[in-house]
Image (tube, rainbow, N blue to C red):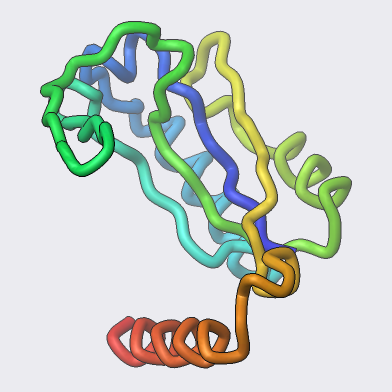
Length: 141
């Protein structure tokens, strides 16, 4: 199963405060462990929401909303995508994670939809398209 691991933003991450060398080193070592175990598929930190935008959809209209965004606790500061056997395994890995902000922080783990989760609506034609797109992405990586 694939999961996305979401590192929640804090006041500091939203203010653009970068991690110090000690935290970067600890996270680098943790990421190496994840990669060596075959767990980590991707992972990145994100710039503060002040550098982002949201696009609001209402029917066929689109409205761009510039950051920063309120409710820091609802924002994301970074993510990983992991391949694990179960949610329990993902939880065990996250318990080994260095504190990502060095202060009070929160990490959310959510399963990623797989083809078999989508039911009959995900037709054989759509499955083939998905496989083709994934192959194209893998070639460019």
